[in-house]
Image 1 (cartoon, helix red, strand yellow):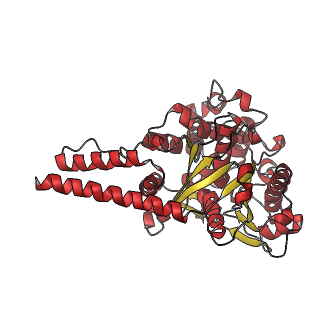
Image 2: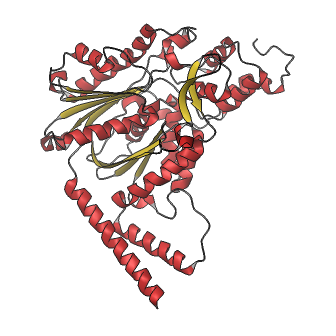
Image 3: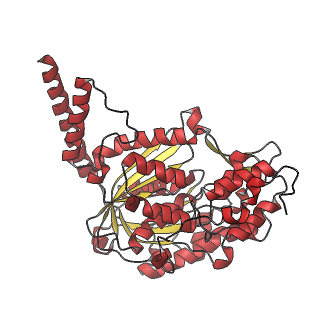
Length: 460
Protein backbone atom coordinates (compact mmCIF):
# COMPACT_ATOMS: atom_id res chain seq x y z
CA UNK A 1 0.00 0.00 0.00
CA UNK A 2 2.83 2.38 0.89
CA UNK A 3 4.41 1.72 -2.50
CA UNK A 4 1.19 2.73 -4.26
CA UNK A 5 0.98 5.93 -2.24
CA UNK A 6 4.59 6.73 -3.05
CA UNK A 7 4.00 6.18 -6.77
CA UNK A 8 0.94 8.43 -6.75
CA UNK A 9 2.88 11.11 -4.86
CA UNK A 10 5.74 10.98 -7.38
CA UNK A 11 3.32 11.17 -10.30
CA UNK A 12 1.40 14.09 -8.80
CA UNK A 13 4.58 15.98 -7.94
CA UNK A 14 6.01 15.40 -11.42
CA UNK A 15 2.86 16.66 -13.13
CA UNK A 16 2.64 19.78 -10.95
CA UNK A 17 6.31 20.53 -11.63
CA UNK A 18 5.93 20.10 -15.39
CA UNK A 19 2.81 22.29 -15.47
CA UNK A 20 4.55 24.98 -13.44
CA UNK A 21 7.55 24.85 -15.75
CA UNK A 22 5.36 25.25 -18.84
CA UNK A 23 3.59 28.26 -17.32
CA UNK A 24 6.90 29.91 -16.40
CA UNK A 25 8.19 29.41 -19.94
CA UNK A 26 5.01 30.98 -21.32
CA UNK A 27 5.15 33.97 -18.97
CA UNK A 28 8.82 34.60 -19.66
CA UNK A 29 8.62 34.11 -23.39
CA UNK A 30 9.37 37.07 -25.66
CA UNK A 31 8.46 37.19 -29.33
CA UNK A 32 11.00 36.08 -31.90
CA UNK A 33 9.73 35.90 -35.49
CA UNK A 34 11.34 34.86 -38.76
CA UNK A 35 10.19 37.32 -41.41
CA UNK A 36 12.17 35.85 -44.33
CA UNK A 37 15.12 33.58 -45.02
CA UNK A 38 17.20 32.99 -48.13
CA UNK A 39 19.40 29.98 -48.86
CA UNK A 40 22.40 30.22 -51.16
CA UNK A 41 22.71 28.36 -54.44
CA UNK A 42 26.19 28.69 -55.99
CA UNK A 43 26.66 28.86 -59.74
CA UNK A 44 26.69 25.66 -61.80
CA UNK A 45 30.42 25.92 -62.54
CA UNK A 46 31.04 25.08 -58.88
CA UNK A 47 29.29 21.70 -58.98
CA UNK A 48 31.23 18.66 -57.75
CA UNK A 49 30.08 15.85 -60.01
CA UNK A 50 31.52 12.33 -60.13
CA UNK A 51 34.15 13.17 -62.75
CA UNK A 52 35.47 16.21 -60.89
CA UNK A 53 35.49 14.42 -57.54
CA UNK A 54 37.49 11.62 -59.13
CA UNK A 55 40.00 14.17 -60.43
CA UNK A 56 40.27 15.72 -56.96
CA UNK A 57 41.08 12.36 -55.42
CA UNK A 58 43.65 11.50 -58.09
CA UNK A 59 45.38 14.87 -57.57
CA UNK A 60 46.17 13.86 -53.99
CA UNK A 61 49.44 11.95 -54.48
CA UNK A 62 49.60 10.87 -50.83
CA UNK A 63 46.74 8.40 -51.28
CA UNK A 64 47.32 4.68 -51.71
CA UNK A 65 45.06 1.76 -52.55
CA UNK A 66 43.66 1.45 -49.02
CA UNK A 67 42.73 5.12 -48.97
CA UNK A 68 41.09 4.80 -52.40
CA UNK A 69 38.95 1.92 -51.15
CA UNK A 70 38.07 3.84 -47.99
CA UNK A 71 37.04 6.93 -49.94
CA UNK A 72 34.99 4.90 -52.42
CA UNK A 73 33.07 3.26 -49.59
CA UNK A 74 32.60 6.61 -47.81
CA UNK A 75 31.34 8.47 -50.88
CA UNK A 76 29.01 5.70 -52.04
CA UNK A 77 27.41 5.41 -48.59
CA UNK A 78 27.35 9.16 -47.90
CA UNK A 79 23.93 9.89 -49.40
CA UNK A 80 25.39 12.81 -51.39
CA UNK A 81 24.49 13.29 -55.05
CA UNK A 82 26.26 14.84 -58.05
CA UNK A 83 24.99 18.42 -57.83
CA UNK A 84 26.59 19.66 -54.63
CA UNK A 85 28.93 22.68 -54.71
CA UNK A 86 32.54 23.35 -53.78
CA UNK A 87 34.86 26.38 -53.52
CA UNK A 88 36.50 27.75 -56.64
CA UNK A 89 40.08 27.19 -55.48
CA UNK A 90 39.41 23.45 -55.10
CA UNK A 91 37.66 23.15 -58.45
CA UNK A 92 40.51 25.05 -60.12
CA UNK A 93 43.15 22.72 -58.65
CA UNK A 94 44.57 25.00 -55.94
CA UNK A 95 43.43 23.04 -52.90
CA UNK A 96 47.02 22.70 -51.64
CA UNK A 97 47.72 26.44 -51.76
CA UNK A 98 44.61 28.28 -50.53
CA UNK A 99 44.96 32.03 -50.10
CA UNK A 100 43.09 34.58 -48.01
CA UNK A 101 41.78 36.00 -51.28
CA UNK A 102 40.31 32.60 -52.19
CA UNK A 103 38.52 32.42 -48.84
CA UNK A 104 37.18 35.96 -49.13
CA UNK A 105 35.86 35.26 -52.62
CA UNK A 106 34.14 32.11 -51.33
CA UNK A 107 32.31 33.86 -48.48
CA UNK A 108 31.61 37.14 -50.26
CA UNK A 109 29.91 35.40 -53.19
CA UNK A 110 27.51 33.94 -50.64
CA UNK A 111 27.13 37.12 -48.56
CA UNK A 112 26.18 39.45 -51.34
CA UNK A 113 24.05 37.11 -53.45
CA UNK A 114 21.97 35.99 -50.47
CA UNK A 115 21.66 39.31 -48.66
CA UNK A 116 20.72 41.15 -51.87
CA UNK A 117 17.88 38.67 -52.38
CA UNK A 118 16.83 38.81 -48.72
CA UNK A 119 16.58 42.61 -48.68
CA UNK A 120 14.68 42.62 -51.99
CA UNK A 121 12.27 39.91 -50.88
CA UNK A 122 11.51 41.50 -47.52
CA UNK A 123 11.45 45.15 -48.64
CA UNK A 124 13.71 45.92 -45.67
CA UNK A 125 16.55 48.41 -46.06
CA UNK A 126 20.02 47.50 -44.71
CA UNK A 127 19.85 50.71 -42.68
CA UNK A 128 16.84 49.30 -40.81
CA UNK A 129 18.88 46.43 -39.35
CA UNK A 130 19.57 46.74 -35.61
CA UNK A 131 21.45 43.48 -35.02
CA UNK A 132 23.84 41.52 -37.27
CA UNK A 133 25.09 38.07 -36.28
CA UNK A 134 27.46 36.05 -38.43
CA UNK A 135 28.61 32.51 -37.71
CA UNK A 136 31.47 30.95 -39.64
CA UNK A 137 33.60 28.46 -37.78
CA UNK A 138 37.00 28.19 -39.41
CA UNK A 139 37.80 31.43 -41.20
CA UNK A 140 38.56 34.69 -39.38
CA UNK A 141 39.79 37.98 -40.83
CA UNK A 142 40.53 41.49 -39.62
CA UNK A 143 38.49 43.62 -40.12
CA UNK A 144 35.82 41.06 -39.30
CA UNK A 145 33.56 39.52 -41.90
CA UNK A 146 30.63 41.36 -40.32
CA UNK A 147 32.52 44.62 -40.95
CA UNK A 148 32.68 43.71 -44.64
CA UNK A 149 28.90 43.27 -44.71
CA UNK A 150 28.37 46.59 -42.91
CA UNK A 151 30.68 48.35 -45.34
CA UNK A 152 29.02 46.80 -48.38
CA UNK A 153 25.47 47.72 -47.30
CA UNK A 154 26.34 50.98 -45.47
CA UNK A 155 24.53 49.94 -42.30
CA UNK A 156 24.02 52.31 -39.37
CA UNK A 157 26.78 53.21 -36.93
CA UNK A 158 24.82 51.82 -33.96
CA UNK A 159 24.15 48.35 -35.43
CA UNK A 160 24.94 45.65 -32.86
CA UNK A 161 27.43 43.20 -34.37
CA UNK A 162 28.46 39.68 -33.34
CA UNK A 163 31.01 37.53 -35.21
CA UNK A 164 30.86 33.90 -33.97
CA UNK A 165 33.60 31.39 -34.80
CA UNK A 166 34.49 27.81 -33.89
CA UNK A 167 30.90 26.75 -33.19
CA UNK A 168 30.71 24.06 -35.87
CA UNK A 169 27.57 22.71 -37.51
CA UNK A 170 25.32 23.75 -34.62
CA UNK A 171 26.25 27.45 -34.87
CA UNK A 172 23.09 28.50 -36.68
CA UNK A 173 20.84 27.83 -33.69
CA UNK A 174 23.41 29.42 -31.37
CA UNK A 175 23.08 32.59 -33.45
CA UNK A 176 19.29 32.40 -33.21
CA UNK A 177 19.61 32.02 -29.44
CA UNK A 178 21.85 35.07 -29.26
CA UNK A 179 19.27 37.14 -31.16
CA UNK A 180 16.47 35.80 -28.95
CA UNK A 181 18.30 36.90 -25.81
CA UNK A 182 18.91 40.39 -27.21
CA UNK A 183 15.23 40.60 -28.12
CA UNK A 184 14.36 40.11 -24.44
CA UNK A 185 15.89 43.48 -23.55
CA UNK A 186 15.58 45.40 -26.83
CA UNK A 187 12.07 45.90 -28.20
CA UNK A 188 10.91 46.28 -31.82
CA UNK A 189 14.24 45.27 -33.36
CA UNK A 190 15.24 43.79 -36.71
CA UNK A 191 18.05 41.25 -36.80
CA UNK A 192 19.88 39.31 -39.49
CA UNK A 193 21.63 36.00 -38.90
CA UNK A 194 24.16 35.05 -41.58
CA UNK A 195 25.31 31.43 -41.39
CA UNK A 196 27.88 29.70 -43.59
CA UNK A 197 31.23 27.89 -43.64
CA UNK A 198 34.48 28.44 -45.53
CA UNK A 199 35.51 25.11 -47.07
CA UNK A 200 38.47 26.16 -49.25
CA UNK A 201 41.25 26.68 -46.67
CA UNK A 202 40.33 23.51 -44.78
CA UNK A 203 40.32 20.98 -47.62
CA UNK A 204 42.51 18.13 -46.41
CA UNK A 205 45.28 17.02 -48.76
CA UNK A 206 46.78 14.21 -46.70
CA UNK A 207 45.99 10.52 -46.20
CA UNK A 208 44.76 10.22 -42.59
CA UNK A 209 41.38 8.51 -42.88
CA UNK A 210 39.75 10.38 -40.00
CA UNK A 211 40.55 13.66 -41.76
CA UNK A 212 39.90 12.89 -45.44
CA UNK A 213 36.35 11.85 -44.51
CA UNK A 214 35.28 15.49 -44.22
CA UNK A 215 36.18 16.05 -47.89
CA UNK A 216 33.42 13.58 -48.77
CA UNK A 217 30.73 15.28 -46.66
CA UNK A 218 31.15 19.05 -46.49
CA UNK A 219 30.01 21.33 -49.29
CA UNK A 220 29.54 25.05 -49.97
CA UNK A 221 26.32 26.78 -48.92
CA UNK A 222 24.84 29.33 -46.56
CA UNK A 223 21.70 31.11 -45.43
CA UNK A 224 20.62 34.57 -44.28
CA UNK A 225 17.66 34.88 -41.89
CA UNK A 226 15.70 38.05 -41.09
CA UNK A 227 14.16 38.12 -37.60
CA UNK A 228 12.16 40.58 -35.50
CA UNK A 229 10.43 40.87 -32.13
CA UNK A 230 8.10 43.64 -33.29
CA UNK A 231 4.49 42.47 -32.60
CA UNK A 232 3.22 44.70 -35.42
CA UNK A 233 5.14 42.54 -37.91
CA UNK A 234 3.66 39.22 -36.77
CA UNK A 235 1.15 39.21 -39.63
CA UNK A 236 4.09 39.21 -42.08
CA UNK A 237 6.12 36.59 -40.21
CA UNK A 238 6.67 33.01 -41.35
CA UNK A 239 7.60 31.37 -38.04
CA UNK A 240 7.55 32.13 -34.33
CA UNK A 241 10.18 30.67 -32.02
CA UNK A 242 8.55 28.80 -29.13
CA UNK A 243 11.62 27.45 -27.34
CA UNK A 244 15.33 26.69 -27.86
CA UNK A 245 17.54 24.25 -25.95
CA UNK A 246 21.33 24.06 -26.06
CA UNK A 247 23.41 21.13 -24.78
CA UNK A 248 27.22 21.24 -24.49
CA UNK A 249 29.37 18.24 -23.48
CA UNK A 250 32.69 20.10 -23.65
CA UNK A 251 33.57 19.08 -20.09
CA UNK A 252 33.99 15.50 -21.34
CA UNK A 253 37.40 14.88 -22.92
CA UNK A 254 35.91 12.14 -25.10
CA UNK A 255 33.20 14.43 -26.47
CA UNK A 256 35.52 17.43 -26.77
CA UNK A 257 38.12 15.55 -28.84
CA UNK A 258 35.81 13.69 -31.26
CA UNK A 259 35.59 16.53 -33.81
CA UNK A 260 38.51 18.92 -34.08
CA UNK A 261 40.35 21.14 -36.51
CA UNK A 262 43.97 20.01 -36.44
CA UNK A 263 47.09 19.21 -38.45
CA UNK A 264 48.39 15.75 -39.28
CA UNK A 265 51.98 14.65 -38.60
CA UNK A 266 53.21 16.51 -41.70
CA UNK A 267 51.46 19.75 -40.78
CA UNK A 268 48.58 19.44 -43.24
CA UNK A 269 45.41 21.08 -41.80
CA UNK A 270 41.98 19.49 -41.79
CA UNK A 271 39.06 18.38 -39.63
CA UNK A 272 39.43 15.20 -37.59
CA UNK A 273 36.31 13.07 -37.03
CA UNK A 274 36.99 10.57 -34.25
CA UNK A 275 35.50 7.13 -33.67
CA UNK A 276 33.81 8.40 -30.50
CA UNK A 277 31.72 10.94 -32.42
CA UNK A 278 28.56 8.74 -32.63
CA UNK A 279 28.76 8.08 -28.90
CA UNK A 280 29.16 11.79 -28.09
CA UNK A 281 26.30 12.70 -30.43
CA UNK A 282 24.01 10.15 -28.76
CA UNK A 283 24.80 11.47 -25.28
CA UNK A 284 24.23 15.07 -26.32
CA UNK A 285 21.02 14.14 -28.14
CA UNK A 286 19.56 12.34 -25.11
CA UNK A 287 20.41 15.18 -22.74
CA UNK A 288 18.94 17.74 -25.11
CA UNK A 289 15.68 15.85 -25.58
CA UNK A 290 15.36 15.34 -21.83
CA UNK A 291 15.22 19.11 -21.37
CA UNK A 292 13.30 19.80 -24.57
CA UNK A 293 10.46 17.31 -24.02
CA UNK A 294 8.66 19.06 -21.15
CA UNK A 295 8.82 22.36 -23.05
CA UNK A 296 7.12 21.23 -26.27
CA UNK A 297 5.05 18.11 -25.56
CA UNK A 298 1.37 18.30 -24.64
CA UNK A 299 0.45 17.62 -21.03
CA UNK A 300 -1.34 14.39 -21.91
CA UNK A 301 1.87 12.92 -23.36
CA UNK A 302 3.87 13.97 -20.32
CA UNK A 303 1.27 12.40 -18.02
CA UNK A 304 1.33 9.19 -20.03
CA UNK A 305 5.12 9.06 -19.95
CA UNK A 306 5.34 9.72 -16.19
CA UNK A 307 2.71 7.09 -15.46
CA UNK A 308 4.32 4.46 -17.69
CA UNK A 309 7.82 5.19 -16.37
CA UNK A 310 6.77 4.94 -12.73
CA UNK A 311 4.70 1.83 -13.40
CA UNK A 312 7.69 0.14 -15.00
CA UNK A 313 9.87 1.12 -12.07
CA UNK A 314 7.32 -0.25 -9.62
CA UNK A 315 6.69 -3.49 -11.47
CA UNK A 316 10.44 -3.97 -12.03
CA UNK A 317 9.73 -5.87 -15.22
CA UNK A 318 12.04 -3.63 -17.26
CA UNK A 319 10.97 -3.32 -20.84
CA UNK A 320 13.70 -3.60 -23.52
CA UNK A 321 16.23 -0.82 -23.15
CA UNK A 322 15.29 2.20 -25.25
CA UNK A 323 17.56 4.84 -26.64
CA UNK A 324 17.19 8.52 -27.33
CA UNK A 325 13.75 9.76 -26.31
CA UNK A 326 12.74 6.45 -24.70
CA UNK A 327 9.01 5.85 -25.01
CA UNK A 328 8.16 9.53 -25.41
CA UNK A 329 6.20 10.18 -28.60
CA UNK A 330 7.56 13.48 -29.92
CA UNK A 331 5.08 13.43 -32.76
CA UNK A 332 2.42 14.52 -30.28
CA UNK A 333 4.13 17.93 -30.12
CA UNK A 334 5.84 18.12 -33.53
CA UNK A 335 4.44 18.03 -37.07
CA UNK A 336 7.71 18.37 -39.02
CA UNK A 337 11.24 17.28 -38.12
CA UNK A 338 14.01 19.48 -39.50
CA UNK A 339 17.05 17.27 -38.89
CA UNK A 340 20.71 18.12 -39.36
CA UNK A 341 21.79 16.34 -42.59
CA UNK A 342 25.31 15.73 -41.34
CA UNK A 343 25.43 12.38 -43.09
CA UNK A 344 23.26 9.40 -43.95
CA UNK A 345 24.11 7.65 -40.66
CA UNK A 346 23.19 10.77 -38.63
CA UNK A 347 19.78 11.05 -40.27
CA UNK A 348 19.02 7.36 -39.81
CA UNK A 349 20.13 7.32 -36.16
CA UNK A 350 18.03 10.35 -35.19
CA UNK A 351 15.07 9.02 -37.15
CA UNK A 352 15.26 5.67 -35.37
CA UNK A 353 15.52 7.31 -31.95
CA UNK A 354 12.43 9.44 -32.56
CA UNK A 355 10.45 6.74 -34.37
CA UNK A 356 10.20 8.77 -37.58
CA UNK A 357 8.83 7.60 -40.92
CA UNK A 358 10.43 7.90 -44.36
CA UNK A 359 8.13 10.86 -44.98
CA UNK A 360 9.56 12.60 -41.90
CA UNK A 361 13.16 11.92 -42.99
CA UNK A 362 12.67 12.85 -46.63
CA UNK A 363 13.56 16.58 -46.29
CA UNK A 364 16.88 15.82 -44.57
CA UNK A 365 17.76 13.00 -46.98
CA UNK A 366 16.99 15.09 -50.05
CA UNK A 367 18.96 18.06 -48.70
CA UNK A 368 21.98 15.84 -48.14
CA UNK A 369 21.62 14.43 -51.67
CA UNK A 370 21.19 17.79 -53.42
CA UNK A 371 23.39 20.15 -51.37
CA UNK A 372 25.50 17.92 -49.10
CA UNK A 373 26.43 18.90 -45.56
CA UNK A 374 26.74 22.69 -45.70
CA UNK A 375 27.59 22.81 -41.97
CA UNK A 376 25.56 25.25 -39.85
CA UNK A 377 23.36 26.40 -42.73
CA UNK A 378 22.06 22.99 -43.80
CA UNK A 379 19.02 23.10 -41.46
CA UNK A 380 17.61 25.96 -43.51
CA UNK A 381 17.89 23.94 -46.74
CA UNK A 382 15.85 21.21 -45.01
CA UNK A 383 13.27 23.80 -43.96
CA UNK A 384 13.19 25.21 -47.50
CA UNK A 385 12.50 21.71 -48.87
CA UNK A 386 9.46 21.40 -46.61
CA UNK A 387 8.22 24.77 -47.78
CA UNK A 388 8.87 23.99 -51.45
CA UNK A 389 6.84 20.79 -51.06
CA UNK A 390 4.01 22.89 -49.52
CA UNK A 391 4.08 20.89 -46.32
CA UNK A 392 4.08 23.87 -43.96
CA UNK A 393 0.61 25.06 -42.94
CA UNK A 394 -0.49 27.64 -40.40
CA UNK A 395 -0.31 26.24 -36.88
CA UNK A 396 2.14 23.45 -37.73
CA UNK A 397 5.02 22.86 -35.32
CA UNK A 398 8.61 22.31 -36.49
CA UNK A 399 11.47 20.80 -34.50
CA UNK A 400 15.01 21.67 -35.59
CA UNK A 401 17.88 19.50 -34.32
CA UNK A 402 21.57 20.18 -35.00
CA UNK A 403 24.90 18.73 -33.88
CA UNK A 404 28.31 20.38 -33.73
CA UNK A 405 31.86 20.12 -32.50
CA UNK A 406 32.48 20.71 -28.84
CA UNK A 407 30.40 18.46 -28.60
CA UNK A 408 27.01 20.17 -28.92
CA UNK A 409 23.40 19.32 -29.67
CA UNK A 410 21.02 22.26 -30.13
CA UNK A 411 17.33 22.20 -30.87
CA UNK A 412 14.48 24.65 -31.29
CA UNK A 413 10.72 24.56 -31.76
CA UNK A 414 8.93 26.82 -34.27
CA UNK A 415 5.28 27.48 -35.00
CA UNK A 416 4.26 28.17 -38.61
CA UNK A 417 2.30 31.44 -38.71
CA UNK A 418 0.85 31.19 -42.23
CA UNK A 419 0.64 28.72 -45.10
CA UNK A 420 4.00 28.68 -46.90
CA UNK A 421 4.85 27.69 -50.46
CA UNK A 422 8.00 29.59 -51.56
CA UNK A 423 10.35 27.17 -53.33
CA UNK A 424 13.39 29.24 -52.25
CA UNK A 425 16.65 27.50 -53.23
CA UNK A 426 14.76 24.42 -54.49
CA UNK A 427 12.88 26.34 -57.18
CA UNK A 428 14.67 24.80 -60.18
CA UNK A 429 14.64 21.18 -59.02
CA UNK A 430 11.87 20.53 -56.49
CA UNK A 431 9.68 18.84 -59.12
CA UNK A 432 12.29 16.08 -59.51
CA UNK A 433 12.52 15.34 -55.79
CA UNK A 434 12.53 12.83 -54.33
CA UNK A 435 14.22 11.06 -57.26
CA UNK A 436 13.28 7.47 -57.96
CA UNK A 437 16.90 6.37 -57.62
CA UNK A 438 19.46 7.69 -55.11
CA UNK A 439 22.21 5.32 -56.19
CA UNK A 440 25.58 7.04 -56.15
CA UNK A 441 27.30 6.78 -59.58
CA UNK A 442 30.73 6.51 -57.95
CA UNK A 443 30.45 2.75 -57.53
CA UNK A 444 29.63 2.22 -61.18
CA UNK A 445 32.55 4.37 -62.36
CA UNK A 446 35.18 3.42 -59.78
CA UNK A 447 34.22 -0.11 -58.66
CA UNK A 448 37.50 -1.34 -60.18
CA UNK A 449 39.26 0.08 -57.10
CA UNK A 450 37.91 -2.79 -55.00
CA UNK A 451 39.44 -5.36 -57.35
CA UNK A 452 42.76 -3.55 -57.70
CA UNK A 453 45.97 -4.79 -56.08
CA UNK A 454 48.78 -2.76 -54.53
CA UNK A 455 50.90 -3.43 -57.63
CA UNK A 456 48.50 -1.51 -59.86
CA UNK A 457 48.71 2.24 -60.40
CA UNK A 458 45.35 3.47 -59.08
CA UNK A 459 46.19 7.05 -59.92
CA UNK A 460 45.48 6.53 -63.60
